[in-house]
View 1: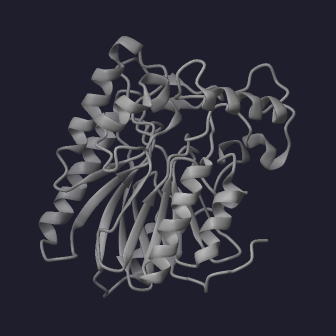
View 2 (view 1 turned 180 degrees about the vertical axis):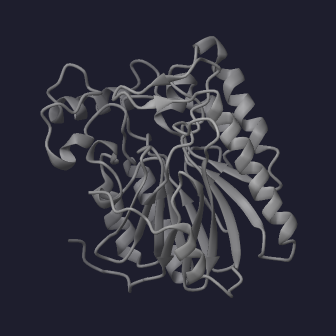
Length: 339
């Protein structure tokens, strides 16, 4: 069951009277396409053109907050886009223009924008082209950065090991297809029919963090713990069953979370992909917040947010369909043995 986050009034009351160390903007699953509105495979309405308007309002909101809070730490320092920048139904001869249109809107934000790959991005363009268009700072689809002393942000490539986003015949795509064949008997590998519980995640529109990226993540978090930094992990795919539907989870979320828990420095894992959103706290006290999708906002509604970072936690102040969430810091000592 998805735990609904508290309302905005309650969250703002929690942080009343305190100035954040810094803030950052969040938006997920814009999935823009210059096509008429449609529906998901489950029949949920999707507003392909209006999603760009949601992004435009998000950028204006973040910039307006900067204008009202010009002092150091008081404004929105950066924003994070949680993937699926364009929709898979976008005509392929318009994919590049659609991505460029969304990037142009992010460029109106008065600060850096950090992106990650989603499955819909990879339906449209090659990953090498996307990494360049989205100006990923490492030249690859996973990276980390420190926007403020004592804090480390980690952006994962949730489709590092996947059946999408790699050229036909690529060894990663072939290995991922074999991985799916062993776990999903359906002819349509996008269907979780007949799969139970968290096994429903073994569908083609999900993916995994590969072995090399896992080693990199372990090193980044080890360094963060040594420097006594609080870390925030950002992924298109959710990493906790309590914060998303089973069919929306990363294939190897348990493996990733073992690395996260090993070092005791991660305060929160933020994600997109599951358009309804969700919130949960795992057994080690790590907060998991899946963000509501911009794509499914009817005209006149929004789904974006601002995260205010305090010494004792993070507060997501949501707009419209994105609920607000208060995430108190519960960092633990590193664990030496993996369960």
